[in-house]
Length: 400
Length: 234
Image 1 (cartoon, chains in turn brown, yellow):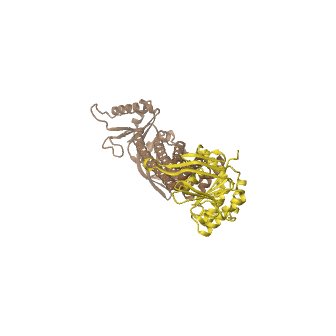
Image 2 (cartoon, rainbow over the protein chains, first blue to last red):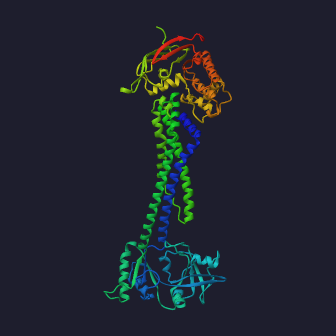
Image 3 (cartoon, each protein chain N blue to C red):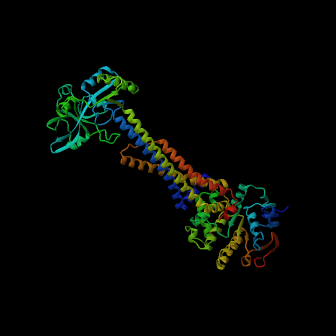
């Protein structure tokens, strides 16, 4: 009986190609839309959290003044001695990188590129989550003597050297020539949208002497071993800096201590809203797909009711008719579901590469969307048929 | 004791609706049909002939009375049992043909055999043979939309006889056809009755078509008014 009914179902699908196609289309739209939206939302969330991680985890910034960003509002800069004090007095601080930055143009042969020069020490690399793609970091004597050496970012390499290996070459910055000793691994855009690879790193002393002309440090970057200790370390940093900068008990700080977690929280709340929004759009698509299926099925009820009447009259049992319609609905919904899954995968991969976010396959949402759309297809394919199959054959035959 | 007749209706009534809207379509029908007969049921509209036909075809149940088919009571059967009687013993031809749209003649004719669970090879052969018998050899792959009315009714007849039923029930089989085509269809029914021994029960309101039957039963107002052998066919 099953085999014969399967044959009847397949014939019915083939006979009504347009109706079958539209039913499948409804399921495809529902499945593909939901999966694509949620996959893109997941990818965006992951991309943001990746970017946060690339900033360096458990990172604390200490900047002069009360504002974050350039212009310290008159507050004094730090000194290298502040960094040493942190290192010796706050044991939870794993890496301490004093930073001094200056904009400058780097020149190699006929190419020149305007970039930011950071002066720091070797702690800068692990604290900022940088890895070296080639070459080495600073040697002790290079840091001490302020030798003209630098580690460059991927963007700078591309602008000055193209695909060439830059290590060992000399680039010119302002009036001095500087040896490239290392190349940083690419990190891409930051969560705030600027190119993190557009950077040249030199020993702190080199920048202070040759570019800034002062002993100032613009910023202190401190990374903490254990994220649970961040709040404690921030407090210690605050106290230490107040002491070193001789701020009275009733005076406000003239510096600011911030951690990456605060930035991360602000960004994740944004992507959560984004994912929610995408989910809502997807739910609407699912609904539209469902209504499409419903429409097709209702429009064809008259014809199908007569068909059921014919089948009953020539001796089909009610359950045979029902089984046929059930198989039909399941076959159409499954074809639609699988097509939707494939389409969603193609669309997600294409769109996420276009948007520069990672593609994450989420089996849960794939299964959910498939089952939900298939259920709609089966429901609307099956229930009108069930009503018709319960009619007297004569009434079904006369149905107008 | 004599063998049971093919069909015996005793005191069949059919009532539709209730209260003020109550309508008695059949008021105690007595009818016996022997195997091999060709009966034309005639009568004006509303005389109950189609209602009687539906009960005879196990498509509808009587309100009262007994219907014995080959000695077995049909009126007490449930839906599924009646469906099985239709599947194994009855063939239908309707006024409106009632073929499956966008389905080839061959597949339409095969349909009852699929419900009987017959193997594909036998099924194809039987369906082709039935189509050949109604004069549609070469039209197997045409859909109803590509066939004339007469050809569609031939496909319907092929579908009805492909299972070699005991009874062929035809409800106004020529109602939608022109005179010449009607005569061809009636000749076909006569041939099937004569050569295959299929019992034919036919409802019609056209005396010209009833001429082909062996026996004419006339319905008036839900009752059998007359029941006599047809002079021409006898």
